[in-house]
Image (cartoon, rainbow, N blue to C red; front, side):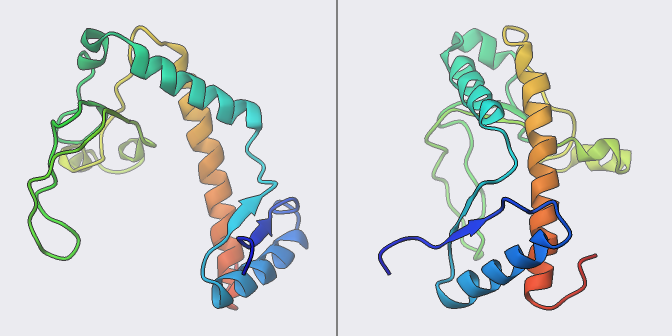
Length: 166
């Protein structure tokens, strides 16, 4: 293999296009096992804006970032070496801390789930920096667009293994 296989998403939103994409997924993931998507519907402008805002966030003074420091739910600023996973995925413990600054923002599922979800990891409301107000709107749009694309890809994967699209 000289190149990474590609899955062309040009027609992902058409009724017939998703079947073509399902065939591509089946071929690529049943032979090679990995690939890359091209021609997805997420605008390059939106992606560029997210990268730019990420760089702007990380360039803020530490005091601005610490104002939204993440707590138990890991939403907000996570400073370098401030968080260590207590258990790995295979049952072993580790005390190795994170080795980079991060900003944890996610879709706010608890707004559509019960209020009891607020005390679990990755739940609750996002924290947004006052010094970068445009981040909230751009990140929210980006997450919505990525969710739509992910759902459509899941439908294509379902078709690729001969399951119902729903």
